[in-house]
Image 1 (cartoon, rainbow, N blue to C red):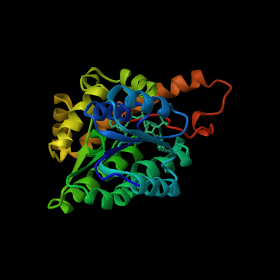
Image 2: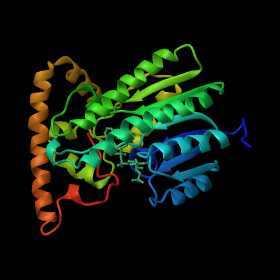
Image 3: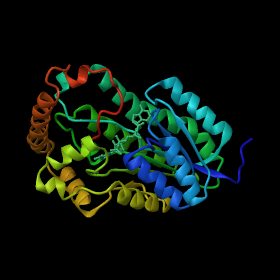
Length: 293
Ligand SMILES: NC(=O)c1ccc[n+]([C@@H]2O[C@H](COP(=O)([O-])OP(=O)(O)OC[C@H]3O[C@@H](n4cnc5c(N)ncnc54)[C@H](OP(=O)(O)O)[C@@H]3O)[C@@H](O)[C@H]2O)c1
């Protein structure tokens, strides 16, 4: 039987990176948590630590959000058992690759996770959020949402979906008790693959790097103040301004130079690392390959 006086924040992709930072930031603010990630990623341990350290309620589910039924089952379990007043759709995957080299299943997973799981969860949790006096939705997009990006292709397109979906929903819910917000961060040092790729970038791109902890702190604070769009950090705000100012063809030209170089470096590393092995995309492990800009 759920307790209407015990409110929960639901965070997807909470085992590592930005999602874990969100979990810690919300716990610090005494928000009870429901955390999700893929199986066997130490969510049990993280939940226990947060529970003990911050004296809050923490539940977790290890589930694959690229599976439609798993998303629906999870949402039913969560809304049947918990009073939820905050939803943070953070889980997302991406990477840099020639489109033709990308494993079709990997591309499909990216679309199912970044777009379908986020949309379905929002739709399925929304009636529960509406029952609360005040509720919040935070969807994690990216600076990449503001332009097509060669060698990333699908990823920025999924993030543009998240951006447009969230802004549309925000307008629809304007007169309700639900604040809807989209987060568009620049590069974040999260998993080792992302960090390796960011370290290979130009000095200018490195200037915008922020830690997941700092981004989570800014995002949760602004979410609770009812902000609609959050671009954390001065450099990322400057980048977002210029991205939207310059003509699209010029953005694509610059993106091609940046990410062609990154992709070239990655291929050299892969050739060295995988001598005698199958190409990376043919290996069966479909877990998070990496993240994104
Ligand atoms: N890193 C950046 O530079 C950057 C920049 C802008 C925006 N973002 C966005 O920020 C968000 C978090 O990125 P991150 O770098 O922190 O990512 P990350 O370190 O790769 O973590 C991704 C999280 O999502 C979970 N996840 C992945 N696939 C899943 C699936 N199929 N089902 C359930 N959970 C799944 C992972 O769980 P497991 O640990 O169990 O695999 C992990 O908890 C993403 O939406 C990303 O697009 C990142």
